[in-house]
Length: 464
Image 1 (cartoon, rainbow, N blue to C red):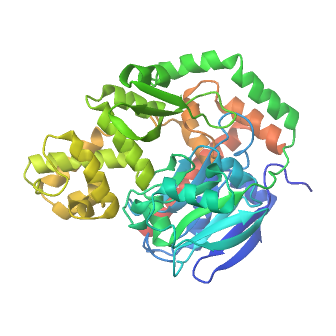
Image 2: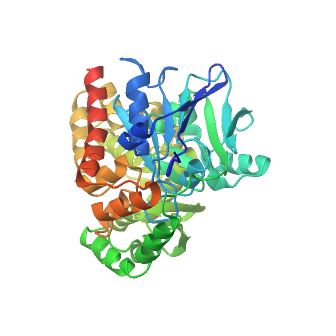
Image 3: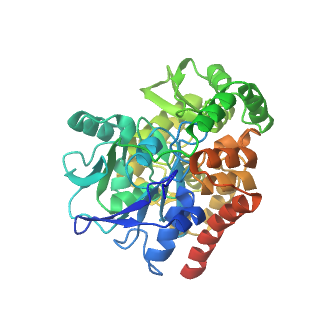
């Protein structure tokens, strides 16, 4: 029987012993764990022991592509990264957009499960389904973006086919992210720190072939219809959520709009390359909700530069901002010493040297590398109340979380796209049928959504 939408293989990578093992999964398993987040959660719950530390060799780092992810249609450019989180201690199911998801889909494997710890820095490359290790000591210490550039030139790969960590991941900053290509981030719950704890600098792919789609003509038709007549309705729907038109927002607040950086085959236009005269660093990628946040801020140029540094160091920009705001309030309350390198009370330009200290875990950056809650617990007293206030008014990675968004997360479909009314359950049913040939019911949709939450809950219950 032919597999539509998946390869039927999972690659297990033993970093300690530099070994590989491919495992076949059943059709029934793919139907139950159809998304990358579900696949990652399955392996974490099955293959880790109770009480394993996030930075232990026994923790897993799982890159996964759902059955629908990676094809040429809107909302399919996502991939998932799962691990035990060094921030929450729970199950991290991070998503990332951009072109890497398409390369992962064509790798020959539906998921790649890393375990153990390399004795020296390594990278992994998969070429036409064949994995091999590459020594990465010569790249260790470089930023995530520069690492991608170095590997790209050395091995003739596209940057978009590479994910890397920066200095923050190497130094196990608890909100370190994994950076894909030119700045897309898998940025939730410190998965970059887990990657760094395994001495894994980069994961690279040379494209092979994606699994066949069940009805490729129907898939093309869905994409064309969505990108045409439905685009205007989609933008209206997105404005209803408060996200607004990200390009018009950025053109109002920034003097230099570089270019769109859209995900493949998606007209939604969430991500853009932007810069300003006050931000001499390289152009950075910002999605529409970060653009809205910049529009509200009295110092957008500083935060734009900070976003660029976060992309370079491999820091979650949302958690970084919350941590910096926490530091300023603690300094004002006299809870931490503001008379330290890179820290000037009331001067938002301090944000930039503070990010460097955090990424390198030097001075006050070592404390702040623990994130808001970790630093608050270390300081104690009033700092806990300050942390509560900061987190209550803090940003979230998605503006609203509804049942549809959680189901899209579970299936490794773009959660931002759920803010268009075009991308509801009917769209998901049509696109899954075109890719897999499955007849999807509302019950299937709800089961995937609930399975995602139950995996997280069971993991939390097991850990006490």
